[in-house]
Amino acid sequence: MKNKIFLKSSFIALFAAIICIGCFLRIPLGPVPIVLQNALCILTSCLLGGWLGGLPTLLFLLAGLVGFPVYSAGSSGIAVWTGPTGGFLFGYLLGSILAGIIAGRANVTEKKVTVKKVIRISLAFFAGMVILYVPGVIHFIGWATQGGRVPADKSAFAYTMSACVLPFLPGDLIKIIVGVPVVLKLRPILAQYFGSDLKKEENTGK
Image 1 (cartoon, rainbow, N blue to C red):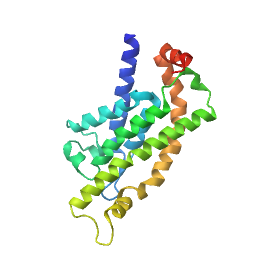
Image 2: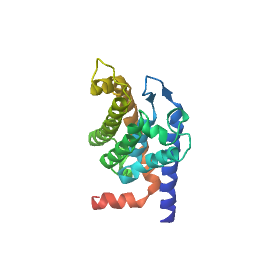
Image 3: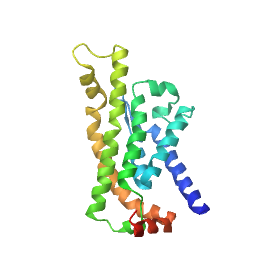
């Protein structure tokens, strides 16, 4: 039992570290850059599955909040949360939790890829990537409106869509297309480390 707890904790910490390392992979594009961390949050969540899926993202967010330079471009602190991208950070957590719940816990029978499993993981990845935009868009609208940053010829919503949604959709689609096969490949391997508790859940229908 202690070994399984240690293994789970180790994977959670490892995945959180991977998300943190992703802070150096970014492409500047206006007030909201193209980043890889959103996809890493969802990918690690789908790998762990269930409520555990959100823990690596939570650790990553807490690390940045207390001052570790793990947010985009090595930034950190409360200032990032109050800036234009602050809502997306909270969205990362919501997206990872939702993705983990939809993906479910991995089990050792997942070595065989079925249509059902592909659909479930694809839905989890897609839903996680979509839901993270919600708090991001809401926060950006408030940030742009309060700061008088909305162009005179656009509404706050139109400006937000053009600044932090529409330019990123093609890249996010590519992240999903690449991420789903990775999850399908690694989930059975990860399940082997967690052992018999997953088999028991499968037998009881949990």
